[in-house]
Structures are given as structure tokens and as C-alpha cells.
Amino acid sequence: MKFNSYSFLVLFAVVAFSISSCSDSDENPQDQQSSNPLPDFGDADGVMAAIKAKSNLPDGTPSLPGMADILIDVANANFYSSPSGGTLVNVGAVSLNEFDLQNVGGNAYINNFTDITLEINSGQTNKWSVTGDNGFAGFTHTTTKPMPGVVRFQTSVPEEFTLSAGVELSVQQLPSGVDNLLWVVSDGSKVITKEARATSVTFSASELNELSASGTALVQVAAYNSESQTFGGKKIYFINETVDSKFVTLN
Image 1: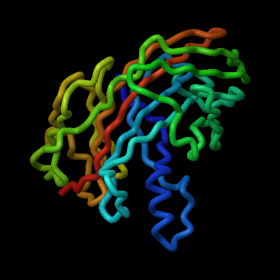
Image 2 (image 1 turned 120 degrees about the vertical axis):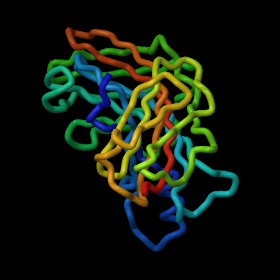
Image 3 (image 1 turned 90 degrees about the vertical axis):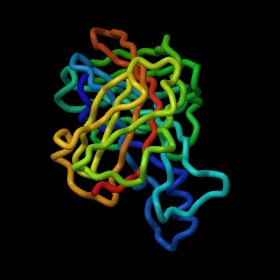
Image 4 (image 1 turned 45 degrees about the vertical axis):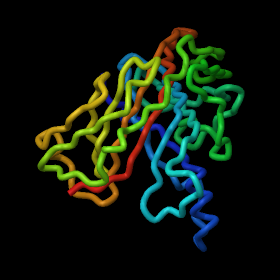
């Protein structure tokens, strides 16, 4: 399964709030964002993702007492003019667990950054609703698969990697309820990904030869499950996913 080229945005509202509260900058909180890895389905007319995103705070971010990382609910939905391709289309109102998503431009749907919780909880199902438009029928769907457990990197995953030596990533355990795991190494502009239902993976130096040294690199692991339903002739995939992200240095 391929990595989805339509990256779903995470609006790190907690980080944005702490930065704006401790800085003289007027930076818009919605500009604090990162992308989550998602599987790509070649026959999808639409993909709807409920994500529990975890990230350690980057160096220089004002710390919050007792909070070494952040955990936030994210919802995103994309609907295509042709299966997994073409342009994104407007399908009317979209909601997850009764929380309305916003069309942020280009017809990509994402939750409002002020909705810190979307009632996305491990072991529970998620309810999606779409009113329909542009050839997509309206529907309501509650996932049959529940959210997987939270995935967490091993504490031994280092802060720095040497590209010529390869990169090894590992998680504490396989979360419950997962179909597969996506593993990612990014230098901030290019992304290398693997898919493996395992507690560790290794990216060889040759696999990473497209990446450049970077002090603002990122490693990620996404544990997910998925299911699909057809509504009005359109095949819609539903993803439940938990993601751990770590800011690192690539040498």
C-alpha cells in the first residue's frame, strides 16, 4: 500500500497557544501544523480519517508543567473527482462525532483548530456524517472497527541520526486493533516511508539517499485500521489512526 500524497494536516493548537502566550509574535495558531502519514487506496473516491496525534515538543518550545508531549484529536476528509486522483470536491457539510469539519480551501476538510477533543478514544468507534454534493450522496456511517491503542516510540529512539548509518525506529508495543503501521523519516521537504506491522524497522542508507542533513527533521509512526463502504456508487474509506511524531536531527 502506498503512502498518501495528500497529507492530512494536524493543527497543533496546544503548541500554538503556548507559543503565542509566551511570545510577542502575532503568529496565527492555524499556521502551527504538521502532516500525518496515511495509507493510500488506489480505488478511493473519498478518504475520512480520525486521528489521535502525539508529538514531543520541539526544542525551544515553552514547556508546560507535566507535559512532555501533546496528544490531540484530528479529523480530515478528502473527496476526489476521480478515484484517488483528479481534484478535491465539495461534498457539503462533513462531521465526525457531531463535530463539524471546516472546508479550509481547495475542498480539503479538517476539524476546527479550537476543537481540541473530537471524542476520538481508543477502543471506541467513530461516527461520520456527510450531507452530499457534486455527485456524492449524503450518508452517515459508524465505523465497525474501533480506534486502535496509542502508538508510542521507544524512549531509546535517539534525537540524532547519521544518514550514512541508516535509521532504526522502534515502538514500545503493537497497539491493539491495528491493521498495519506506517513508518516515516523526513528531512522537512522529502519523505521516505515504509509499511510494516512490526515493533521496529530499519531504513538503510541507500533508502535514505534522497534525504539531506537537517536540524528540523521528523520521524513518525502511524498505527491504523481501515474499512470501506459504498454510498451512491462512491467508495469511501474510513481510517482510524494513532500517530507518534518526534523532531530529530539528521546528519
